[in-house]
Length: 117
Image 1 (cartoon, rainbow, N blue to C red):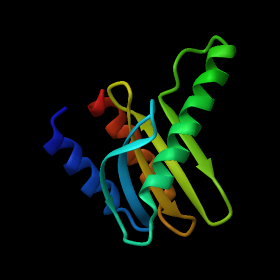
Image 2 (spheres, rainbow, N blue to C red):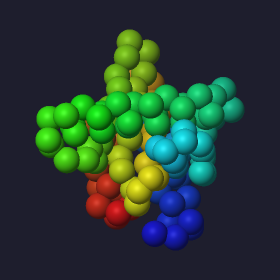
Image 3 (cartoon, rainbow, N blue to C red):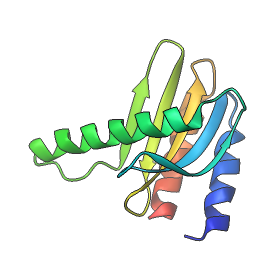
């Protein structure tokens, strides 16, 4: 996938109601590769959290002999972080408010999962 295609994916994800930002994150080191986000979103913090989540989920699935994870979701009282695997070690990550269209976002992210790999 080209960088232009990644940026198009970021723009489409941030077009979903309630999405505060979308990032491409390296799961190996928690760094932001590309981003489209509202100013108040601390994207470096989101990238670090997403990388930690992905690595923890990977350890859990490995312990269960279930293979590598392709998606990871973290939902809290005020928002959600959704991540789908791209070409290793990259992940597409979205942060959304709880009052956003989380169902639509999940479906869109799953659609991108196949395209990104």
